[in-house]
Image 1 (cartoon, rainbow, N blue to C red):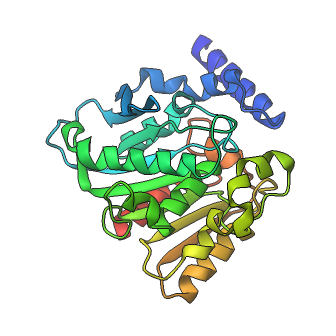
Image 2 (image 1 turned 30 degrees about the vertical axis):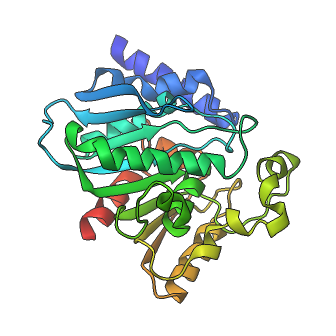
Length: 292
């Protein structure tokens, strides 16, 4: 009964915080609480960029040996390119590890410390580190999938479509990653709010061409899975629809799954222990990868 009371309290804390529109510290602590007692091993704070002191965390089940050669998902969290921390998404890494993946969650620099495209370059460096080092943690460097939510989906989508970022790290966007899973991301947008105009100011002279993944679609991209909530009022579902249509128009491989009664925030809680199973996000990701 006491355990049930604690569970109910945690659920209420999370739901209240998310309802108020803020992924507060309390909400993240509640989301991550069960992962602290799971059979998932977290190797944290591995430096992948010494110049900028950027770190990543690796999640794998405790029983996984260094010779396991499991598929790898590199997940970029969201936060308007301004906030967020890898440790806040421990629930994502744990869930992916429990599903049989090596999950890697990198940090990246944010505004106002940097502007576009620095955070995309950081993402490319994280993928390069994974490619060169993940084998010693039981991951298969030939099966790397990149994923992200919101601003993180924007980063992942540009890594998958604009080959310049991975090429700068001596990687090939067509062969060194297997697929891209983008959740609730913006792919065909121009910044309207002042805070976003400042983030993408360097690309204004190019009419924001370089911030839009749709502009780099040529049909030769890695397969892309686009997941979006139909009730998303922060990043509209048509962003995913536009990208899917552009990829298909060019002869590429893209799949869009949109969920009823799901918004920009609770699509992520569906990856946690409090998700009411309205959207099988992790199951859809797993099925997509296994079908490739």
